[in-house]
Every structure is written in structure tokens, then in C-alpha cells.
Length: 172
Image 1 (cartoon, rainbow, N blue to C red):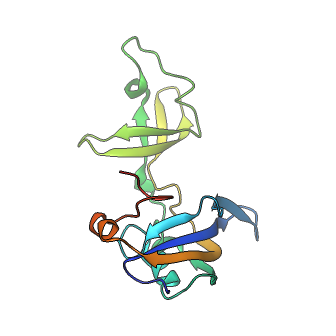
Image 2: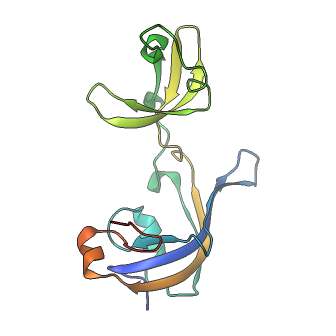
């Protein structure tokens, strides 16, 4: 059976991005046979090029492809890096949680319109916290290397819900 729309696909893969050192790669994610990546092909929840690279493969086929940043999570935008007054992080007594508000931490935030987002703390000054709201993989090429381990027909319920049910999928 080949990978096509309305099929449940199980993959093992390693996802890397180019590392800061020339020629190296940084590991982002690695699946295992016990915990593969399982998804409903064609449901629209994945990167378009990711699915197009896998289309028509079958069980046992290997894959090795790169999705350039602009076709993955986009380029990093400087206007998504903002300075937020430290007062926004203070509790009612004027204290800041030093463990949480720390450079390198990712914090859940809400904008003035109520939209939820996550921001990476990239700097702290006496008066402000500098946060990066770009996707963590923005500006990075994605290198996927792996193997197709299972392809099956999706159930009517999975198709109707737009996701996989059962083992390694969504549980209701």
C-alpha cells in the first residue's frame, strides 16, 4: 500500500538542522519503532512539502530530504522579537519568578487580543525582558531522514475527525 490521501502513515525519522559549526547538524527530534510518528496523510496538519516528499512511498522505503526554511516555518522576523516591560512579569507584590523568567526559557504569553503564543526569553535588562516570538524552527532548514514503517487505510471515524485514533494517535 502506498502513501496517499486518507491513509494512516507511521514513520521512523531523525530531524536535524544545520548546526552553528560548519558542516555539523543539530538533532531536533528522533522517533523510535516503539514511538513512531503516526499521522493521517492529507489531513492538512503538516508542512506541505513534508507530505509531498512522502507521497507514493510504501512500507520499507527510505527517505532523506531537506525542507528549506522558507518552505518550513519561515524566516526569522526581527519584528517578532520584542521588549516587554519587567512590570508585566511581576506578581501583585512586585516580585518576579526568577526561575521562570530566565534567559533561554520559553514562556506562555497572551497578546492584547487574547491570542496565545510562546516566547523565548533572549535577554533581560534592568527594565525589560526581550522575547522572541518566532517559531523555534524559523530560519532553519529541516533535514528529515527515515523510513516508512506502516501504511494502512484510515477508518471512517479517523477521516471524519481528521486525525489518527488508537495506538500512537489521538485517544477519545
